[in-house]
Amino acid sequence: MFDVFIVEDDVAFCGLLTHALLETKKVRIVGTSRNAEAALREIPRTRPEVILMDIKLPGMDGIECLRRLKGFPPLSNASVLILTEHADSKYVFDALKAGANGYLLKDHIFVRDVSNAINDVQNGGGVMSPAIARKVISHFQKASPVAAALSQRENEVLHLLADGLMYKEMAARLGVSLNTIRKHVGAIYTKLQVRSRTDATRVFLQQHYPKM
Image (cartoon, rainbow, N blue to C red; front, side):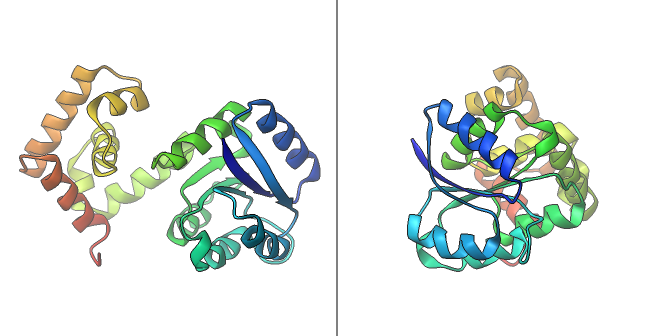
């Protein structure tokens, strides 16, 4: 069971989300707030494992709140899921740069999606609504020679390789067969001219995070 804090100014949505998540018996809601300022006071006190954060809030926005929370050492390892109506690329990339572990669109989710997303980020995964994932992949394909050489599905597999997932986990995540994953990995190795997961991950990191 994970401790969750919700930052959401829509009282009705927050209430429905809270009730539905509690019904799953998989989370414990340790607090809610309607604005970032209150969240910055309450979250350090409650020490949640997962924070569900809206972007558009009265006063300080959710992305700035996220930046400040990530700068507070006891909360640096907390997982933050953006839960918003806004799919603008600027919001997406600003949130990811600020340290968000996932980005979900309210209009395209069910409570089970949020519950699954909480579980995924707590197990080291990253979660995005399909429309958001397409934006991110498109961005990398334009910005990175490595990503441009790979198909969209190969890019997805490369991201999962870099995240350390095993082949069976990749197959389950993408809804394909184990043999299909092996074929994609083989194609990635050929295109990147590497022989191992480690080498592929190194190339991935050099292209996407050159300053690391």
